[in-house]
Length: 283
Image 1 (cartoon, rainbow, N blue to C red):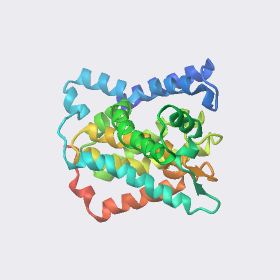
Image 2: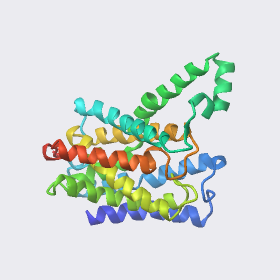
Image 3: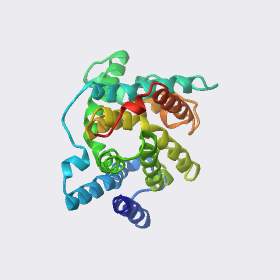
Image 4: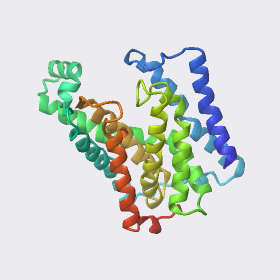
């Protein structure tokens, strides 16, 4: 497993250093550089998948080690529904902060709303439904495969290598590695713009709390694809939840802010209280 982690970090952190040294994207990230930033993040995020594919190919038993199975069960549905529930709960918690208010999608995305109104004749309410459908259904399904660049490594190969440990041990180890691995992009302005140091620590806690919840879906869904669906839905819906919040500080914004940490900590407590950790197993 050490070789997997070394290869993962060498690829991703090496890419981040090269991009930073050659000034290929502005630091911190800016909306005007969205195309270059997205390309950089795609290459950066592919590190765990590259490492997992290399390790499983050299060791043999690739399909088993990557946990790549197409055997849908009810946990695949829950892998889509649970992240939405977490985001909604974090959103409601954020709205309880004094000075924070909700902004409907047609206002938060005003330029897109104006264009849709001109070309499609949609009303603001129809636009809001279209945005929700795109994020929660279309975006979730597309991101399901996009996040495999991470999940083939974390909830695929690494989870397979930690089978002999307890549920909490294996997923806290994965969460710690997952969080530390994000450090360069967090320092560059991802998720917590303007907070390159505190943002790293904050996101490390986020990853360690999220890891057991995603891990539950991965194990009970019996496939890395269930983890990809969970992670993909989270990535698709989280930006929308941030856009529809006004007046919140960088560490107060929905699922990636302290409200999200509280919601996920309570979810981890629920996993333990309900005994779901004792019933889960990677295989």
